[in-house]
Image 1 (tube, helix red, strand yellow):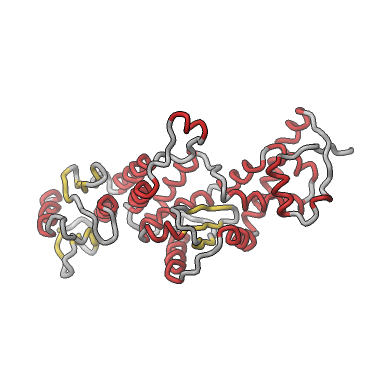
Image 2 (cartoon, rainbow, N blue to C red):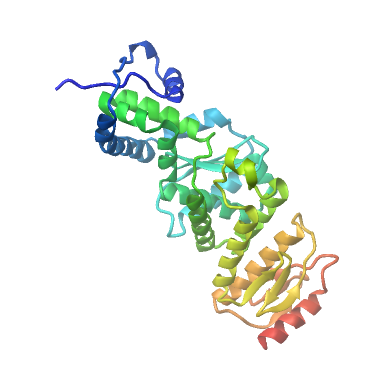
Length: 357
């Protein structure tokens, strides 16, 4: 039976094909398809494209890594590379992450990270410079969640559109399909095609991924505090919301969501009030100031995360001041008071009075 081809392809696909195919002129000119034919082939096309994308995702990491690095460039910095490699290995060994990820640093000075097909994750230099390892683990855990749930595959399909997917299915040329999908995957890194629900899911899984790898439960909230300080709420209202729809939650809502997970992790014992006051069982413990390269709000969530670990592991004991001047509960470091903070003794007395230790 003679196959019927489309006459038009989306402009974006034409551009992609011109970029990835050596001889675009050999591509078959297609005939117009009826609406019924489009609907008929639609389901089959999605199954076909899913199969092809899954093949790229699972078996062509090296090629896709090279392609993505070509688009972004690689920041050659031994210290940052070592940090990323260490965190990546810990996250991939946490028992929750099932896939293998290739992670690298880009020279971009903006605050961003992304995951594309092939389980390739890029972290911008700008994010590396602003985040500590606990915060960075939450960000990488978030991106790995996108990879685990195959969100980049769905995003890549969105960059093409149903007409192109159907045409690729009808044409049934694996080489052409692979070239187009690889090009679309490369373009995916520049498009905001994630959904709000995918972002919430990635934040939730990112928290679990980082904590399971032994990172501070306050790292997720702290990372969002840094993002908010750098870029604001990343949220549009009114007409701007219509022109530029929101696909990420408001940053403050993300801070609050991570804070909720932190409190749940502690069994409801540890909270942070107004992003700045660390509380134990509803009582104020400390309001830390800016110090050690962290903003005051960052420190609040990281200190709260250390307290949450004590409750989660059922290792509550008497708080004390170590020889280094820091505050500990058992072997768990809680915080190192800085100039402008309450005294170590005052904080220790408050903790012990509340816990009865």
